[in-house]
Image (cartoon, rainbow, N blue to C red; front, side, top):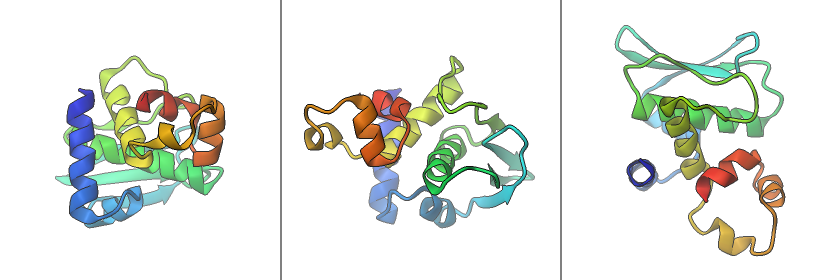
Length: 142
């Protein structure tokens, strides 16, 4: 699973010369909406053969938007025919294989392969703070 996701992400980065999830969403003609979603951070739907990503308009900051956008893009790429919800809390922890794969996709997209060389001796929490991601994404990159 991990190598397949890494290869998929690397191919996207190479083809579109970006690791920005919103640039990739645009390049891939995925529809993107900011809308009130209550307690949900985001979700992915396939609506009438169109891939659609919805992000909660109330997300607290641009970094969280980037993380949720990358996660939902993972669903659009890895699980295009499933209608997936991003889990409600910030832990990104789920035992559901589709959620784990989307989390891994986000980790691979947002974090460079040599991240640990750049932060030797730092804790996961410190690396996450420097990279503006949540610690769970750092853990998935390990």
